[in-house]
Length: 195
Image (cartoon, rainbow, N blue to C red; front, side, top):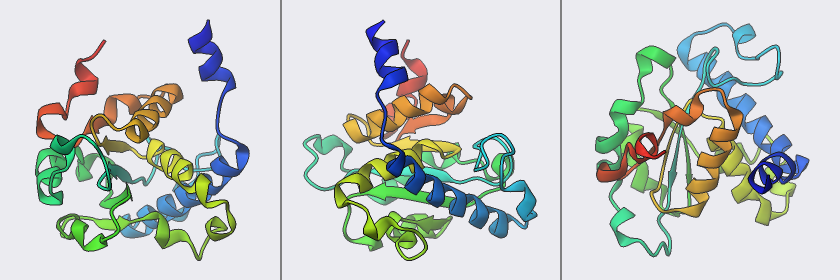
């Protein structure tokens, strides 16, 4: 009862979902442009926004760097890419667009990703949305919603930030939880093995 209560009644405020929805819409529109898909396919008629299974979409990563206490998860971007790129099937989804939620300040850390994908960060959407006028304490939650709406998501093992993205992906109940992974080689399929 209490787990269902939390799932169904406790959620982020509308301001967070609206801001994230605008970024998700722009990501889907960019995926359509990059894939030469007509714009009318970018909007799902039921949600009036993006859909992880219909039309153009994007992939997402959460890469925790900063002061994360689990040193075994602090691996190079090249190691992250090598252990996970097989999960990002461009033929199935027709996308090479990648959104990265991270606390890494040096964006050159992600150069190996840029060799294979068009990479976007939250800061890329500051001028085209109202993100700069939002309370800065909400931006991390906005990123969680954006990552939760990706076709395939790869997170940082043992991170609570990744943990909530994973939980939201399960709440959607549309199959995206099965496309949720971790970046460390030993734990990539951990979510597919657990009960």
